[in-house]
Image (tube, rainbow, N blue to C red; front, side, top):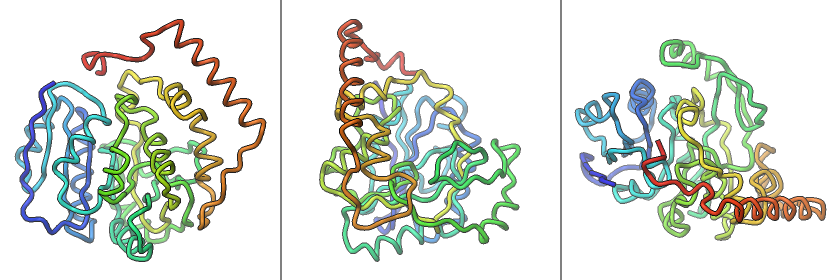
Length: 309
């Protein structure tokens, strides 16, 4: 594995550091960077982790001023990619963002104001994602402004979003999310056993929960448009659901719905877990099931990096 770094950011006065992993997705990446440059309130450090970059991504990023990047010749996934990107961070806060996202004006100002009000560094905040399709997620605002670079109705979105209304919600987990660098370091970033990345989001969030953090808040006044699953549809997915259950003893659904109350109206302090005896029994049965499968197939989903593409 050969990873090269390039740091072109000037000085250290950055409010946030944005980590963006990308994998041969240049059209969306250009749109994402363009939105960060013109719609952000603060000066932001942009760090791109380039997996392969064979579609011209590497050449394009090299030409961009003040964009830091790391490049791996092969696709090593988001877990390794984000963890090594931490080495270039210059600010006190890390934001993880997908390359197929478009930020709306002052999205970062809303995050900053929330941090100021929190008075602590032990939190995870998320922007509210707008998506063109309904996947029955109560933390997502469904508005169709296109599902590709070619069909994206940017001007209409910029005109309309001022009228969008969305309440703060519980269960911050999905990108774009923000944590303090000390919190990131406390839990060691993303867990590489979830490579190339499926279920690494709830795992990271549960590590924060295990570390004692209880502020998981989605902001209804910070909007980001998400074109949706433009990378995950191309990869060979790891069996993250199984890994999560065997690691933590509960399913991801149990954690998100009964520990951090994903998508419910925001409530502070966070309520105690609402699990019951039936949940415990079902989780135990699933653990036994996956344990038996693991013994029958001892190599499981452990793939060499060459097979992660």
